[in-house]
Structure formats: C-alpha cells, structure tokens
Image (tube, rainbow, N blue to C red; front, side, top):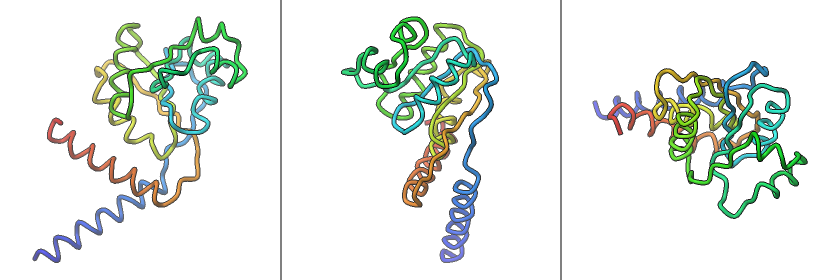
Length: 176
C-alpha cells in the first residue's frame, strides 16, 4: 500500500514536472496596462520592461528587488536610458529579497497608486511561482498580465523551481 502511494506521488510529480517544463509561459504583446513590474534576478527582465515602457505599454514601472547600493544614474547608464526616465517613470524597489517579498513590495506600490492592471515581467521558469505569490498579495480587483522573458533553463533549475512552486502552492492551501 505504501509503495503504491509513493509510486502515485512520484508519477504525479513527474507528470507535473513535464507540464511545468514543456509549457513555460511566453512573452506577450505590448497591450497597455497601468503599470509594469520587473522582478530582478534574471537576464533580459529589465531590458524587456524598459522596451515596453518606451513603447507606451504603461506609464510607470517598478523594478522590485534592487540592491540598496544601486543608484538610478548607474542603471540609466547600464541600460542606455535617459536618467530623467528613472526620475519620472521608474521606481526602484529596494525592500524585496526574494519572490515572496517581491510580491509584497509590488502590492504596496500598486495600492498606493490605485492601479488596476499590472504587467508582471520575470523569466519564463520563474513566472508561475511569481504570479502565485503576487496573486496572494494583491486584492482581487487587480488584474495581472504575465509577460515572461524566454530563457534556456537547465533541468536542475527547472526541477528546483518546480519544487518551490509546489511548496508554495501547498502552503497557500493551508493559508500560509
């Protein structure tokens, strides 16, 4: 009986992992939203957010999880963006240290501005857990548009992220 239960759990994990790895979220078009939120930590994320901001997909952008030592002038130089764009349109969120605190920081930022739609930008393999965390932190009235940055993750990265996703889903079931 225990062996069967373990086999069923293992089969469920494997099938779920295959779904998770094969059907990674994709980038979207530049449909407008009230705001763009970029989670730091992966290549191409800030570039994608800046491109969408430049195209007019939103008027404001939060970059969540920025190190306290990073100054706007440094980011402007690194991404070849005029510094006044950071002054008018980009907020550097410095409170977040992980995905869960990214969601909390984002929720507070959106609430202060009374935004109803937000485009979440993160890497494709990170999107599901990020979206789950953000959904839990936001009121139901806020719509989230998922805009994943494509990558080529290793099986190790995918397995680690899938396990984190399962743990967070399980914790959410228990209200944690």
